[in-house]
Image (tube, rainbow, N blue to C red; front, side, top):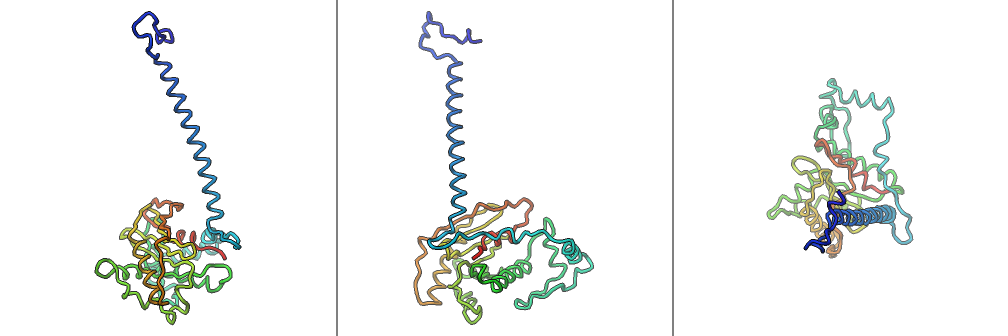
Length: 277
């Protein structure tokens, strides 16, 4: 085969490059490209790991750890039995617990949304967010100060002409109603319903970012624009000052579990962005 591909010096094609040399040259080029890609991947991985370690560090402040693991502590056998009883048909209509501060009743029927491949409902999400706030109040030395809007907030905010209505939610955040100032919070969590699943947006005052989390890898820049406008209006209304958020980063968080079965891992999203103090 090599002989057949050799150059015939007596022919008119003296300057013809043999096929095998072309093939060898192509292989060498591909090999060089692969080596460069591998080096780039290794470099990017190191940069990503370094960024994860130090992205939340500020001068004179220790690096803060995520509390992702806390939401996924394995259940004890006793807790598993309690879950089974709560999800049983015998408790379908029974009020298993009432969250007093939000006055939300949780029945066995409502809890069915936590079964595999089911769809989350407002009651479960809202109670979960209330519990996160209560945990923060119990352990203020451990968790950042956050505010958690309920599932009706964003829909109300975009209910006006042009898709924006600050006046409809203006009184939701009075200090008298909340017991604290929204402007003092490090992060403000906003659940977003996308008709077929739930997403989460975060006004991250601490890091000056507007963040969007979607386990279906969706990107809705309009949500971030609406929340940026809302935050400016809120600061003006509650403090009489103007804040410029034009330099704040708009981030579509990608380091998330990918949704495989139509059920949004909403609890995981929240946990991933609650930082220990």
